[in-house]
Length: 158
Image 1 (cartoon, one colour):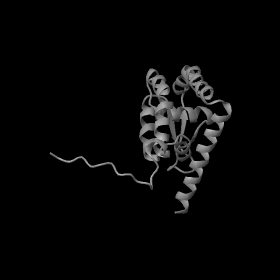
Image 2: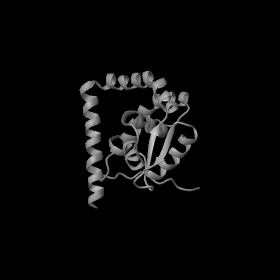
Image 3: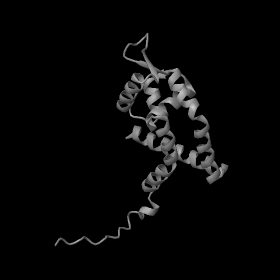
Image 4: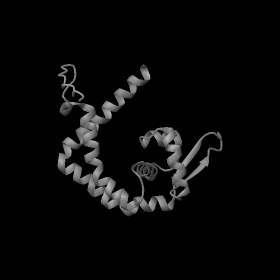
């Protein structure tokens, strides 16, 4: 019979209940649960929803900018855009000045998905604001943006 190792107390690490990565993961899963239900009804993925949201908000854009704003890695975006283009949700065109660059735009069918689920998405967002309160919601978003910015700055400095 194999012995089960005894848990080690490690004073260098916070308990998982106080761990930022674990807390962020738990929060993301809780936040995404109602959104996933909505997206399942829409027949699209979380990543496709983010792409459609960004394009709906900002219009046609270059793939690198879209990847950044939709919080996707460029190789993932390429695969996602390909399937979305095949489904008629986005269109793709080469940059007339630089054929290596591509611009992605939302189509009428893609915008219809946003429009059809706008009320439900808005209700979900309002629910999160209600849970936290306006001030704490805004503070949380600001702190998360600050953390992301600082960590990305450090990645570029390294």
